[in-house]
Image (tube, rainbow, N blue to C red; front, side, top):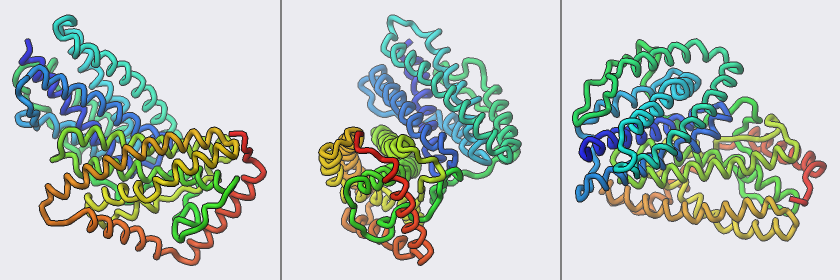
Length: 425
């Protein structure tokens, strides 16, 4: 019946919302490059399902407009505990082999029990959610297997954690999400499973296969001319690659601010995170196409690290003011690359610009919201000053060795690029 369906779908919504938050919280601490690229896309897909669930719940409960955790808090806490894995492989392995498959089973069970005619709107999007989950699980399982092979030191703790998570999930009552009341959740001892209290990493972790540096390009610590021709192409590819920081910052803001945020913050923050990792992939794919191996690609965490000692609203300000400061370069470079015959570069910058226009709206909207809710009298201009100062402080900390390393990266990349990069796009 309608009331029971709404209750079950509400639990699915809370579960999906918590899954998004878990994946976002882990993103900065993830070293594995394949996982760093995958998680923003997966959490965005999960957020889309959460939004559809939210809309359907409101339809079924009309005219009620509130969806609170209320009596379902034990469910959120039970799944939230799975964030506390001892290492990245443990988190990813449990996600791939226990948590996501169980979510898929829950959706499939609902589809089996639901009336496909009367509850057709629910059936429609849950069927697509199951398909997405099948793809997610396959992708996660492949990268988990690869990571376990490259980092066998992480595997024992990961296996122990995954078995414990599996045992806890297996102890859930059969069809326990159905009915008007939520049954008692099983006990899950994080410490006994080898886990530890979870905190978001405020330093961006980088895959050891890359050329890990403090500043990936000279302009990261000191303003530099952008250059033209091949230099501008390579510079843009390197900067796109290093937009991984922006995906991490959007994810960190999502994790930090979601609990008391309006429902649509989940939609915007997850999309922002996914967009930024697409920009990162633009640079990564370009550099690969030009023949650069990962150990030739400079990867830093400078911009994300700038928020290490700030609060969540200032971190939101860092990503927002980066967007507004450099957005003018996007259409300009789309034209420059197009005129130079670099069709792919022009195409990338055109879509980058479209994304950034959306992001400036997100930043303005949510900065105003969280400042008003904070009630401390801070204004956007105050946040901008703090955000800029956090970046400048990190730039000013550059040592002579840091500056020499950035200059060497530039010379090395440009020497190789002039031999490899064509303007054909």
